[in-house]
Image (cartoon, rainbow, N blue to C red):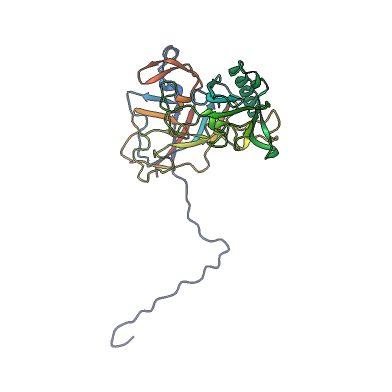
Length: 351
């Protein structure tokens, strides 16, 4: 104290000597569920039995908003997706086979396989029988062979490798393979589409050159490795946009990889039971431990109209690979007899 005034000095807080530190209670935000089922695209089963919409491209229509409330985030937590798109499908069931005998002219014919799920060893057997039948008027092609899991050529010998190898087994007879032309009446798909040529692991040069024997690159015979589920209505408020290495970028709800720990094949590629993911039908279940959280405006409801599309790993609609699609069309989408519907659960939170 000086000059009749007082001077105050700050008092330091005493150290906390309690064994238990003071805590602040924290609880997670309140949440609710938004459940989507592709089967709900139809009002009832009388409509569903005659419906021509695909489970891979459909709309949900309700007279009222699907969800109201002051929520700020939503994200996919679970997906159940039946996988019924075979590895040999309308996009991957054709290949051109070229044969020459004794230095004569080259004969090129298109081999068409029936859409089906096939293991690699089964595909080799189907290809072998198909090529022999396709050239049944060429005696030297009766001994054509194709195998999976090993290579036995003049230059390379290997076993237990996931490749296709083939041989004419006839002196003077040469064979090669070519992809079918894109954007044609018989194959109306763009050049970023995988063909049977690619499923077999073949490449330009090694397998398009006529030879007595050759082999392709490593392949697990799965033309589709993942699918994206897209709904522009549910990602509309997303401020931070998605990105991807594909040429066309879309905001997605989630990406579903065909492979998982539960469907890995543990036997050698030389084993007839070797079945990589995508070579057999299954039901994929995904529980997203860290779901993508989509920003949402709290004063905006989830609308009664939601559009969903499932796209393959090239960005093309999945229904294009669906062998269950009928040849006729209804509106913009092919008439379907695919009844394997998928479903997803989204968690909606207040903050």
